[in-house]
Length: 99
Ligand SMILES: [Zn+2]
Image (cartoon, rainbow, N blue to C red; front, side, top):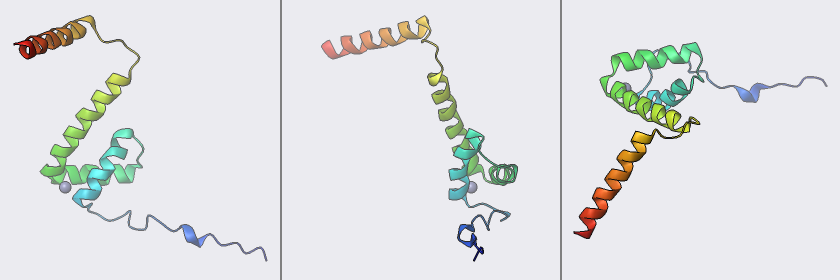
């Protein structure tokens, strides 16, 4: 018997739905941002974002977070002016606490 069937792994049968639900679209946004999507999926997400202001807003937030995370992961030390700003803020906070 060489008849080995691989019928257990049927999935993604609903990939070709024309419309994503909001919750699904938002979940996929993360894959979208990672560039881990097929073009078909990307189109579906884009289509949903174009049609749904709510998700577009959410997508913008996620994109900002993602970019921020990416930036902070770069092997670049914080610019000195940023460090100065943080130190100044800490100093102000301490002064307020000591008041
Ligand atoms: Zn939506």
